[in-house]
Amino acid sequence: MQGLEGRVAFVTGATTGIGSAVVRRLASEGAAVGVAYFEDAPGAEALARRLGAGRALAVACDVREPASVDAAVSAVERELGPIDVLVNNAGVLRHTPFLEIREEEWRWVFRTNVDGAFHCIRACLPGMLERGRGCIVNVASELALVGEALLVHYTASKAAIVGLTKALAREVSHLGVRVNAVAPGPTDTRILTQEERSRAYAERLPMRRLGTPDEIAATVAFLCSDEASWYAGQVLSPNGGAVM
Image (cartoon, rainbow, N blue to C red; front, side, top):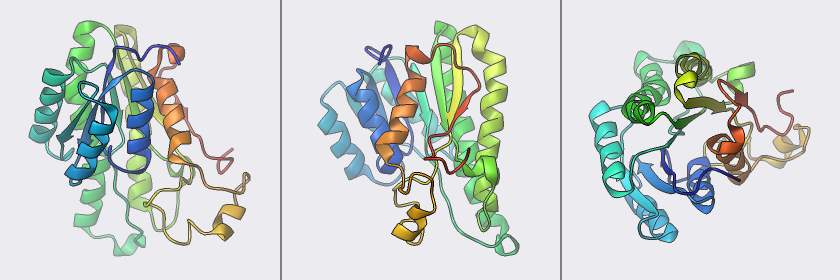
């Protein structure tokens, strides 16, 4: 991979699953990483320590709150340097029949999945534009491409992320900032239900298995690198054939 040595990345939802894998992959490619967490301070700090002093910083960050995001971004830039790469990975999910979704649950999903990405982009984009370079990768979902029963609010929020990605790419690509998205398919993380992690479920997929966080992180790292210099407003979907 080319283009990550000497770069500084800010990754949200960074302590488990795909987020943790993204942090580790970007660091292995040479980036210093801001490990943004919501609740798991010990996990974030342990991950940062494994990456080494001066290579990572664990920062508390509630993506729903602009002040929290601004403070986290400022802390990373003070310790590691200007942020070149933003990975919006923080997200929440709950299985609920549509007519049982209450206003509070709908807003909880959108405040985290959509408003959170907006707040992080708003905090990081001005510096990227000032320097004339940057990369934003938003984590969507393959469900944004096909929909899913019992996940209307989650699916709608991830479809919003796809729209945000494409529109922002049209606005800032000519200014040196690339904006793309990754839409993972069924990945072996704790966000899946027990049924979705069963062998029977995996057998229904063309590749007969779930994806791994490392496989998703590889796609994110590619989009963050200079090897993806001709990618703008794209949605790459590593999904094992779940969506074709």
